[in-house]
Every structure is written in C-alpha cells, then in structure tokens.
Image 1 (tube, rainbow, N blue to C red):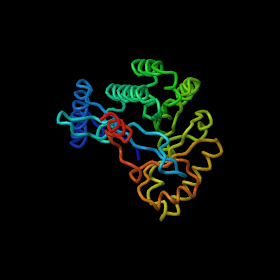
Image 2: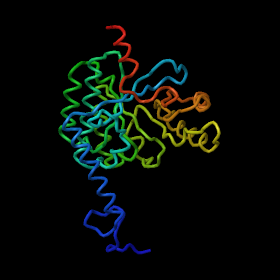
Image 3: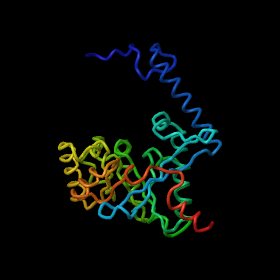
Image 4: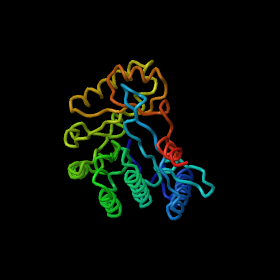
Length: 279
C-alpha cells in the first residue's frame, strides 16, 4: 500500500482535517497546560516504591523514585497520564530535572538510602539537567554510588552512542545505570555490550502471570541468561502475587519490584520511620 501524504493522520495537528487528530491534539494541549502549570507552581513530588531482594524479600535493596504531578487540590496525577504528551517537549526535560533534583536532595538528606530515578536520553543534551546532576553529586561524596539512573529501552536507542559515552563518564563517579523495560524489543542487541548497564529491569509483560504462562517463563529465562552472561544485576518489575514471586525466586532473579511488596507512595516507610523517631 502506498502512503498517501495528503491523507489525514492520527497524529494530525489541529489544522489537519481528521476529527480524531484534532481531539488528540486538544487533549495533548490540555495535558501540556496542566503540566506546565504544575511545574511553575512546583507541584511535583516523588512517589517511592521498594525494590526488594528476591532471596530475602524483607530487605529493601533500593527504592525507585517515580515522579508525580499534583493538581491544585493535591490529587496525584500518575506519570502515565502525562509523560507521553510531554516526552519530546521542554516540559519533559523540566520534569526530568525535577525528578533528579528531588532524588539527589533525598539522597543528601538520607545517607543510608539508595535510590533510582527515570531519565530520558534526551536529557543528556539538556544543560539544566546536567547542571542539576553535577550540583547534586557535589553535595556528598557518597551520593554518586547511591544513585541509579534508569533509562528505558526505547529511550536508550534514540542516541545509543551518546548514551553509552554518558554512562561510561558517570560510572567513573560511581553512578549506576539500569535498563528499564528490558525485553520490550526496542534495544538492538548489537548495542547491548556497548552500554554496560549495571542493572536490567525485566519488562513487566513477561512477569505478570509467569506462574501460569510457560511462554513468559521461557522468555524471562532467556533475558536472565543475557543478564548472567554480562554479570548484570536483574530486577523483575510488576510482581503482584506470591506465586509470581516464588517462580522468579527459583529462576534466580536478584530483586523483585511490584505491588506485592509495596505501591509507590509519597510517604514511604523510611519517611514514616523518621517521623516516629522525632515524634
């Protein structure tokens, strides 16, 4: 089928003729306006989710900090409701800056913690984000070794050579890197050895129902074999049931993350413990 350049597209701008395209663009504009207003008012927070040791689930290996936008009323808006609209825009870079700044501030305040935070490959070339990173790392000599930067497969493949060079530079400062959504298919395997990720976070689509789905077990085993070959730490995302956790433990996954062990929270256990001590 020959692509008709004059045919309206689903991603049409408001000036295009597709009603669906106009509706999508109008929705994106509303989302961008909401996010821009929240950024200006600094209504951004981190929700922390624990990542536990598979062999000893009572022990937390680190927390992932997930950015949340708040409405004026204080209602939390999950990232999935706005990240797609802002990912390629200035607002996306500003959110990356806010998430990183909140993470680094928490690390400086809590020297016993290790935290991960998501970033886009696009932020590597964004001077304000680099400034936040350098300033935050200078707050304490231990912050670098307690910081984990997570990059999704699709994001890493945007600029693979630049991402690989950036990782090498930061790893010399002790910063660790996690490949998020590993197995989603966006990463060209020929680039894998160039990235030298410290952590592989297995895509949740292979984890959900793994106790009942033989295909998911086979695919997860293949991903774990890659991780083992490269001596890389592995984390299973989206673990929701004890049965899933038991299978993953037997398969040799290093860490588990999901609602079974805790939902992302603006008031994580380590903050509540501090409140009890100071009360």
